[in-house]
Image (cartoon, rainbow, N blue to C red; front, side, top):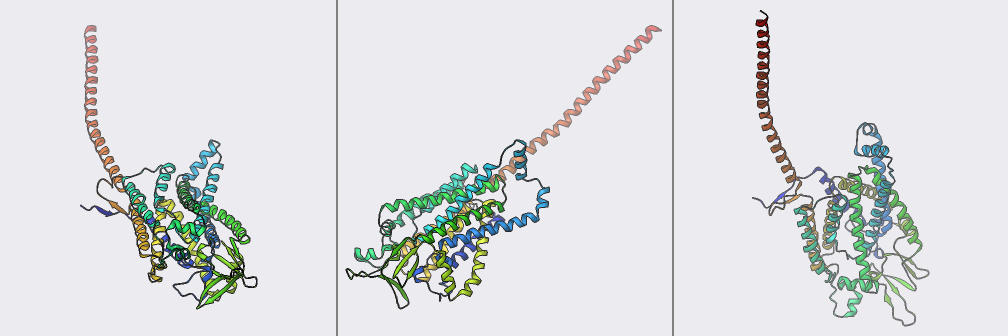
Length: 505
């Protein structure tokens, strides 16, 4: 007997694989979030290629929100074309509408629910992009499975099966322990021998020292961890709540995408305008040095004649604007003026013009696949995409950097990749692509539940068939008894009539 088997591959699982593919293509065009703007070049090779969007977090968010809006419009057009067929059919949404009309119920709450959920969803991907721009990962994402299962239980009333408990054990205990150990190890190794070198290469420290040195205070450790946990909770809540709206409330996909697109475009444009006019940091008296195609910015200190190189790793924002006449270096989180200026001055403008529509179409596909997964699979399946992409992108960048420990230590690489692999296996167990057939871990699988239901229904039908076989026999006996009784009564009546006749004679 096999202890592990393959589950039935639902046709809707194809959207998971499609999402992985489209998200990988999107990450590739953005440069896998590994590109530094200050060292950007127009003559990038195929391996090094990155669109301008890869250096502009909010511009990237704007494309994603706009793609959601376009997806919603496309689905709405399809909906209008099929409106005649939909109108003639009786759907759950129609039933709820009729119910609200009969009982005088208002739909204000459900529309408020869609708006609030879409707002949380938008804020989540804005916050996620900001955390990714910090160029380090302080998120203990392995505990995210607990959030999703709990929210699915509370909102969707999903029961926790044995195989799902195994998923929790793998992720929340084994993988989480690996992540905790990994957080105390340095990310890179520049062979530092003293504290001065460790201050210069702060990524040679463990995660907590790295955060403290980057932001200048150990208090930021708690704040950064809080933002990561908040990001996980917002993402999980919005996913589960969107599935509730799609499944339980039977809201059409185009409405969900339209709300996400409209709210996303409004919020991102407001933030983009704000951060364009409010820089993160300004450094005066800076000169630009380009030696051996390696760009550095040096701060000139006229008082002490002790010049120092600008450390971009310590900066919160990565987008820069250098004013050569004023010798001023300004840091921005994003800036649409710089984006359009770089686009006008780019030597590969034609390449950008060709690829940008492709990038938008890829994001349209990402939005569509995400909604289809939420509707027809579950929120947990969305996490498979994230882990696959981290696994592949990290591997590609590690190979591209020739396994240099100045980019990522081999220990860090192995532990991080191991966590991704364990997570993918755990999610496959959760969505029942992998079946564990020992210790009754397959008892709550949908396939087993369906088999038990079929068996129970057959037993019920067999019992009813036995009763139905006996019923005709009993009814025939009752009919015969009734006939005999009637015959007896009739014979008595005949005898009485004959006796009366004899008396007359």
